[in-house]
Image (cartoon, rainbow, N blue to C red; front, side, top):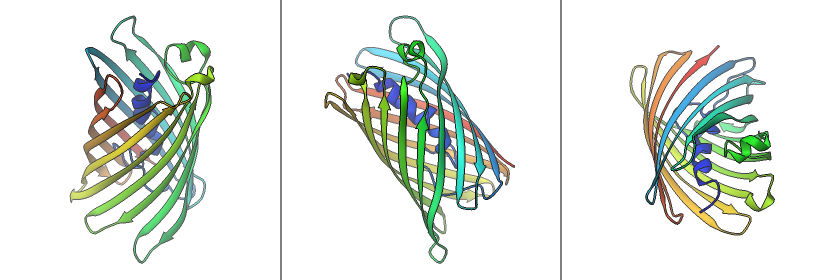
Length: 258
């Protein structure tokens, strides 16, 4: 079993909030805040993992602040908190990574409402004690996401391709990941949208072991005004580890733009 399979699924929740232009989606879109625009997000996730005969639980919470550096570019920072209840042994909790990143919409065609963006992210390391408790990685890590958005009459479709690397103090624990996903949003009523998201992530260890995981999510977004969103989602993920893990996640969040 890969050392941080549980942490890898946590990354979807605890590190993705910086990507959630429209919570509760894991897949990002090309939207930006505009020059001087600001956004504050709170995201929360509750996970249950079944792996063989073992059951574990985790909670994640994250604050993300985003600033529009230009009409086409944002910069953001995310602070995450993680609580873990393993199958055996004591529970643990604490702050995870501070993530710094940017999103740049590098191309758009107004006539077809098609756009492309790129998003680099830097994960700052946690302390040796927190790494030992599996709250994060002990060396600076990174991710790069390519994003495509197509606006449609019913809403929008978003595509992501992300490559990342997790670096531990012990280089033998290092991992590389590749994730691709697609999401759709439907405008179903005034202030209400439905969301559907699915994708696959492959994690490869320094020893060459690979684990592939798939996820699917359904969710809803309620926007009482242009400045606020409330979101709720249910994520189901599975992998081909030995033994395989099945994870259910309930996630919710709040977004405020000003």
